[in-house]
Image (cartoon, rainbow, N blue to C red; front, side, top):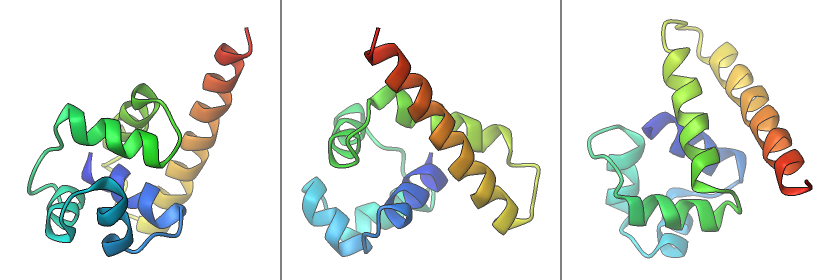
Length: 99
């Protein structure tokens, strides 16, 4: 989950302190989440979903997709794949919302 949260933060151009302020949590807690030292509560995931304007289920699917790809150690390639997966997930979510 931590890698997904970190990639979303970076992709959206936030520094950890900025995001912490938007989420109403401490910067150290953001760091602990992103480094998998702590797991986010459902309340915190709700806040992330709201800040990034996505459904919580989309966030969870993105995190799951990253975890399934963890065997690949090339970081640049993992980031590129993660971005593509996120775009595909967002595209599918958009299709469901338009039905």
